[in-house]
Length: 119
Image: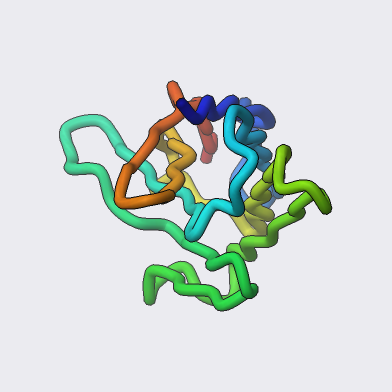
């Protein structure tokens, strides 16, 4: 069972930056893909960015250039951490941001961290 714990959300003014982190534990195997999704009020959950174990990345088209995903993997694979650096934040970036992990055909989710961008 993989546990995901997010941190780093909060309130920021438009134009500001935040860095989200997500620590995955509970697996001694390398997690294939980790990523971030977000869900704004009244909207569906959507992909923000994802990163593979080899470092390949995928971003939502409209977030490229403002958001950067990165990942740390411990040598024994026991600890996987994924970060999301968010710059030039806009009020429309306000959402709950969820960490996501895929391993052995299973998908795991964190509980989410709220990001609020004020105008």
